[in-house]
Image (cartoon, rainbow, N blue to C red; front, top):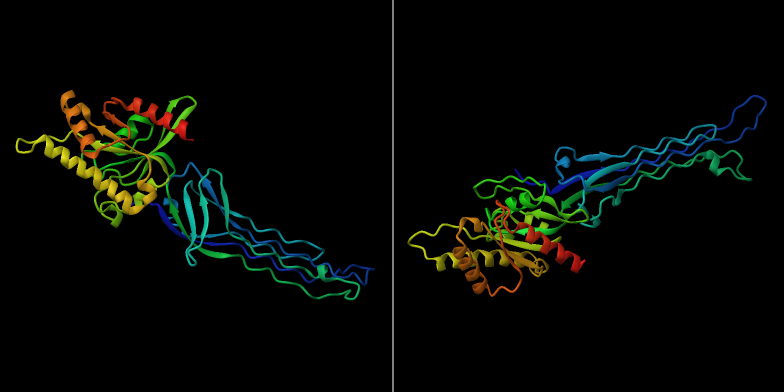
Length: 345
């Protein structure tokens, strides 16, 4: 399964209705004059950002969207009906490009934000409009204009306050389940998360933030390795990054604790390197270390491994020790995140 965060569609606005050429014909009124009405405007195509939609999956099967045409004008000064506008709902965070010119059309970052992506055709004019003192019986009309037609490319970038990153099976999905109502898939094998998940963390009735569970990253992700750069881009709109590290791996007799610490440090540096390769801005984001699965270790083992990693990295940012599955330390982490947002918003 591939997370549907890109889509190609075609939008076609409605054609404007034609003007009407007509003359008034009534008994006892021999010179009724022109009475042809104008056509109606063609319908336009709009995009609406809707926070209740999470993916672009709806565009997997339907690729063409058309607004209706304007009605033609009629006699007796009847104006044609305007075409109905077409409103297409997309997730908040959708970036819209003109596929042919590569022009950025819209960046829908707020719920309820609307953007016109294809303007309806202008109405045609009936012969009544062209009546003048020197032209009492005009036969001139204008045709309705064609509506805009565009090939669009959608790209979805999730909007979240917190982005979770780490190697596969670091416990990101378990953490988001522990602190929010989101229910991403959890299993004991790598890459169980195949698409980003969003969860709302409520610290109390009036304080909350949004957390995004991003699929596990591996070395070479910026080149498409693992699940590729399609997920790295989602981190670019988060406010802070939580780097989860599984500190619980079993140490065999022939592997020293120091070797394990070196391996974990190498993994952390590898992900940091991929962030920098993808975007300097992303690499510069605030990033906290979260040591997970401490419940599988004794207190001394957990302290030794965590302190060893911190020392080797020369880490200066905040550090947390948690067990996501047993919810040890998770609320303290959430309170610290809430404090961070309140101080930096």
